[in-house]
Image 1 (tube, helix red, strand yellow):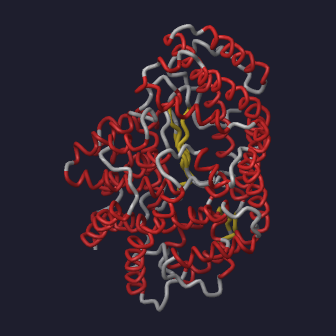
Image 2: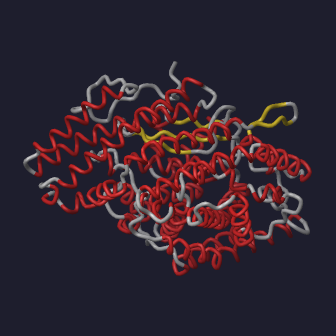
Image 3: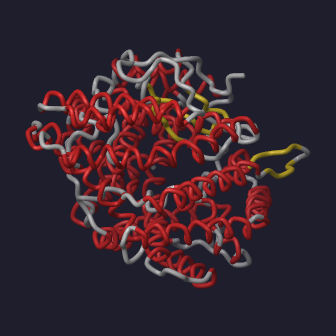
Length: 576
């Protein structure tokens, strides 16, 4: 039984090194391939031989990565399918731990190779830097800890994916309940919000237990690698060569000073328009003029067709790529029970094709999510001709420029979903959402800074740190009577559980995306050309150069932020 939405997809290039038929469940079939590469490293007598060796290693990495991606996709599409879970966990627990020391050995051989320094510097400096980092950080004793970390992450996803409530005689996922928070009936919104919050709170102890175990594991991983704490380790492990924890703290401060005033203006306007004395948590998604919720589509097929129309207007090349994804069934977009929460784009590394996963329920945010993930997909497709697998990806900070720029550029054509007045409203909601997301990003990132710079902290201390950040970045929302829900709000942010410290990238990238959008206001053709040029570089250049190629600056200070916030304010005023 094929649990994947797509059928068998051929490799972009025929394999030359990896056998055609490999049983990915058996490490005994993979180990000889690493043996061959180890032997051949010593036989590479020239820079050309070493480059051929790198390409064979890259081919093996792509084949392994695609197998892992396929199992992850099947598991997240069917969290309630025991076969999908078993296959994914087998790969995580039995194959990946065997891979890590063998990959480390190949990295060592490359770094020590006498011909390495004769390779073209511009072509290989990023690969050289990243491989050096891998050698520096690898510890054999961390392999079982990382395996356990992945297993706990899967358990968190399984738990969250299983949560449902009974509403109007029907079982609904928590994601499906989100659309009712846009309803103009305020008592209904409150009922729905309380129902979802209480359902999450029922699992709070289990969620905290999982997280306590994750924190303990991560602290040990950092200690084993010789770091004072996991904060320092994570910055190094994430390859953050171009910024520091101190830069992130400065970014939090910039958000507090430049974004929070704009957020409070929007909240004050919302409170006035709704005629309320105070905003409650269930008042944040409804239209402030009490108009019916925006319903851009009823069926997911309709969303896909109208998004295709957006790309048809934006750029013929991107439109053709999106159509190819549709034709190859590389989309699983509808929400259903048993499906993991959230949305993502995953690249099938051997086919060099992107797959998009999300949980659409018929709200405007679904349209923005599809545009966002399509941006990631265009990024993957822009690098298809790159034969070094390491360069077909890019640092997250720039990957998110690809996706967030596409939200902004695509929303300029949102009339494909709505009549003119509703289209204006959708664009305004999106821009207001950008103002809203920056403080949440600062909260999540600063929270993780606190967690991992305070080893051995208690749950009570962690909760106090979270609440302090909610006071700083939460704006003017009244949580009276719902203090417990506020204290546990971070439980819904899967990045904290699955991808520690992967969240500030959204904020850094949003500044890049706003610059791409600002450029498009001046000269749309050039802005789009620069954007596509940046994507085509993949991960072959350092982060500041990727930003520069896309026409923006890699900087996240108040100086960069201030004019962009003013541009958003100006556009919001036009849309009022």
